[in-house]
Length: 289
Image (cartoon, rainbow, N blue to C red; front, side, top):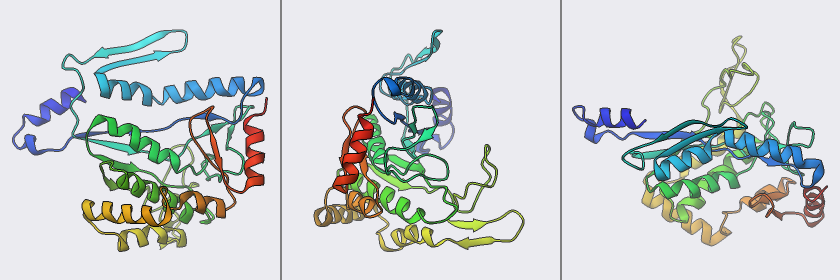
């Protein structure tokens, strides 16, 4: 990145080019605590590390890239002689906070709503990714987020709660410049073919369905049609919404209405929000073992 950035900037017109980086921001959590979940916690820790957010974050802050592997130690190590790498904007790819069960399978915290990709809807993580990335001091874009939902019964909730987290970030002063949704039309996934329905528009490769707008996608249409185009006005609208419906713009209440217990906070410091009896059930499971 560093070499490419500097080479492009010295080309004719390169000084005006905006060159950034995109990273998939993903954290993992074990479904519970204690002996029963010790292996799951270890797996979650290393899986999160291998997705390299901590590695990239350290590089962005210091210019030091240190890729380590279990047992083998440092595998790739590099220090940029100029210090922090040059970067004009930062791209946040975010879908969820996956959960590992005690039998090392994809799971979810109690009553979290699962997507077809076997990770839960977790809007808090998008806000957390924005907050952490803001330390780089450059504009941010949500360059990828979306849901696989073949029944189209969770898409509206996903869009509404995730988009509101971006508005919450704007209201709190974070420099988010854009929101790109994955994806416009049902696509081919490398691991699952055409089975995962991410598209705002339904499409089938056999021609039986050709670009039909899903009902759940209309939530995003409403946001794009009703919100202002310029950042300053959007920030003002977000702050006004925050004043009226609360700091999280009603995301917690919306998830609770769908029957979910909203789990937020760092591992070991989780906070549970929602219907009291369900929150008690979730707390019991989180403390299991």
